[in-house]
Length: 276
Image (tube, rainbow, N blue to C red):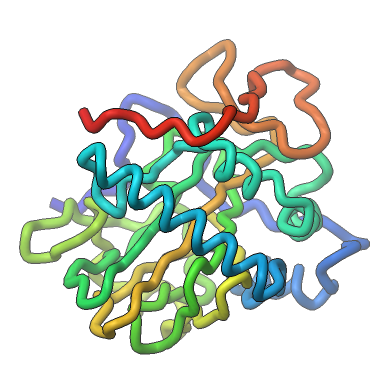
């Protein structure tokens, strides 16, 4: 059954809010215009090759620790309150500089997720909009996708549908077993909502940025090389969750004058939860 509301118990404002930045400091005006018109930009250089290698080794350590407690490679989801290294990546100034040029000086991070496709991983990430999954309103979230590994056309890169972010909520189906989907929503007709798919190929240490209403997905990893990226989700402090009074979030830059977002402190070390 085709759906347009994954969270019927919550009223949300799902429309694209273009960046109103007129004097960006780290992006160019053309890059901000591309984000507004196409819904994304990439690649942006952040980490040096040496730092990218350190990021890779950190993920592999988390992967080993989490596997010992029964987790899969997709389970390292919203552990920024448990793992100091993920918190540090969410607070990386070079990343925040780009996001600030789109969203303004006050930034909150509420979600993080490693997406690791192992060699020969048969699962896909079906076409979807991030905003469909999140109990947040209004839809002002910018996702940073940090390449942990090199990403090319062979190992299942993320794909964007340019311009698909301007249509608000796009109808989707609940995924079936045949979809072999990492997530649980599938937009069946992506070509109807924007331009030809664009492959997000990047070197480890580079990032892409996309709006939460951009239609995107990825094919299985048919190569013999892993493809891992860390998603970091940022929004301004006027965004709200279901909770009426307060909710936890990393105050990455600036402040939340309303006090709604309660600061998430940096964890001491990496505290891997037990598999439920």
